[in-house]
Length: 342
Ligand code: TYM
Image 1 (cartoon, rainbow, N blue to C red):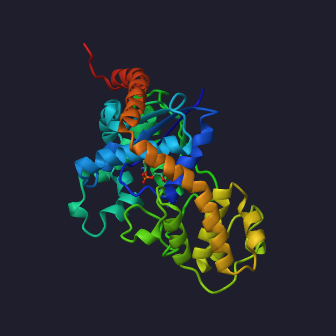
Image 2: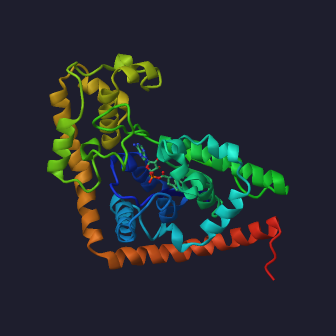
Image 3: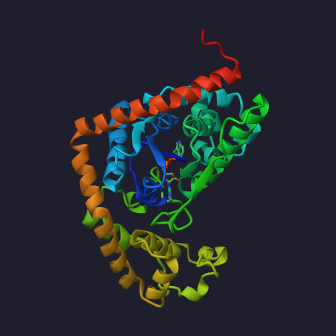
């Protein structure tokens, strides 16, 4: 069976973008693929993490996976640092990837900001570790939000260069799965910025553990303009929002996309339903939907976070299973590269 791998960083403030762009899409894939869902703690420390918080945040992402409906008996749920193969393969990939490739990564530029000299070297080679995560299991399908596309293209280049340099057909081709109508959820305060864990404004994001009151307040405060909601005639033949239309009303399209994703309906149907409505009516409907869909997940996450013994057991079991899958792959890589294992 083809294998799926994906990961989420335990950096706190897990939000609606993480849910709709990634975690929610992990769930149905369990029926079709062998799935590994990782809490990428090695990636998290590319920027400073308080050690105590990191442990809590690792359990939080695990709780989100479980509460969203990932079955730990079928899928493998684990935290990255438990499986040394990730770091070992990442080192080899540090020697395969080229500086020029990493220099093009927009996420590094965004995260390092103006003072690049002060960024950790880990942040720079972050995408090489991501390639190692996937390829240590020879996974082929990777469900992610749109912002990870460039990293996955790099992972594909690394796999190809490894195969080419060593004259082997060892690593498979990686295919991104960018699914649903909310692959890039934007900030509720500024429709030109991605919803992100690190935005200083709490009102910019709905976090997965928000209760009904917080969800309602954030949606009510979400930036909109006084115009009525757009109609379906604006969409192109495939039901997508043309770039020019999106640029004109980013906030409206963002909220409509969130609604469609939460309701599991095509964007076109949602747009048709609310065409010409006042924002106040639409925001009320979105609040009701968000509370109905996210409320039970947030409540289950809180219940699980109060039971760290269970969560840790899930991670341990997943770690054992992941190690067993990665070991033969790494043994073969070491042989290909020419490392002796006397
Ligand atoms: P992270 O933790 O930043 O994000 C986790 C997932 O959430 C998606 N995402 C979004 N989707 C839609 N709208 C948004 N505003 C939004 N913000 C985040 C991300 O695309 C991601 O799918 N590098 C990865 C973690 C990782 C990984 C991997 C993923 C490490 N190794 C191997 C796949 C395969 C990341 O940035 O996670």
